[in-house]
Length: 423
Ligand code: SAH
Image (cartoon, rainbow, N blue to C red; front, side, top):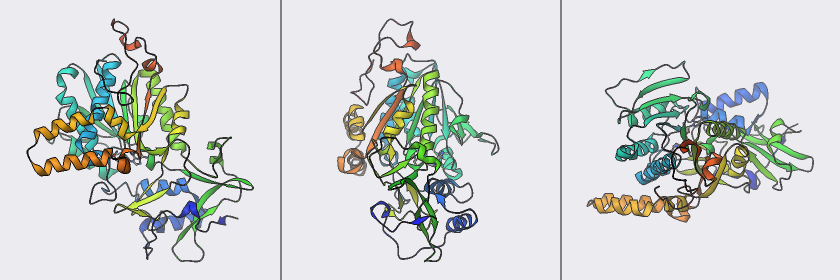
């Protein structure tokens, strides 16, 4: 028998709205639960966010002031510019390969990669003769269309093939080939810089609670007391995802995200094989937090079980788990606070350059407000973290393998995690 969970500190996320509209997603989930029984929180999250017919991410643009939440690249162009510099700095530090791929997971509106590509154009003299291609991993039909509008050259028609792993192809405004995939596995393996900003936090988590009988998984069930309402229940016995909990776990409630582990393993294997780097930026913790599963609608907290499909669902990223999944294959750096990372990347200098260039008071104000939002410890400065995966050789101080023919040994410092220094 599944046991009901009454409120409690773990499940109080969100302000309960007065009404509980029966959304198409709620109808779909009730039907599913009626026919096959309660579902895990991970399955709930996956259905609500990425169900191909009704998922929250699939058919809407939820980003920005008019949407449900706003992200750093949408707040300030400086964010993407500094990340562009990070990639160039890593490219230089690892021997200036003749070609590289930029691969972004969950690119939203395409703003971030657009800002990165602008930096590549501005530093064209450094990157000349380097073959660059862009690869976007995106499940949302709506957002992939917005990305194409933001990034591609109108005059070159997009090639579309919904049935193929590469479902769209085009050329960016600066003439770089760009392709879209639903799955990282389909992106060509090759020397790549991977980027995941606010991507891991939307991957489905399983939730567990410690009970006198051992770990019990939290499921989503239909509330028998109230019509058209869902509730959390505890599984009567152990469930397979328990294998993801550490043996020496001391918390009494944990969230585990097997999908994040699969993606980190894939990234690690690729980086170990071909070189490159991955940069992950997200809100999260280092294996210390308990219940972080929550919803956002119209920039406000939203009860995760109310009106599913109308609000974003998210859980903090457990960076200690990402680190464990990378261990043995590649080196990892971080997590470090966004404030420190951006400071190390030279955000103050960049802000000053942009302020000096602009006479328009509204633009200057926007730049200063954006800076405050990204850097203020009470805003995004301390809530967001940066984490990187790099080939072991990159941190070993000596000469990097890819550049074995050059005489200069490479510094082991990685920009962002320490102060940026051009080599
Ligand atoms: N990185 C962007 C958008 C963050 S929102 C920014 O910072 O502004 C999360 C993004 O991940 C969206 O683009 C969403 O459509 C995409 N997404 C969610 N689940 C995904 C999955 N399983 N595979 C690929 N993309 C996914």
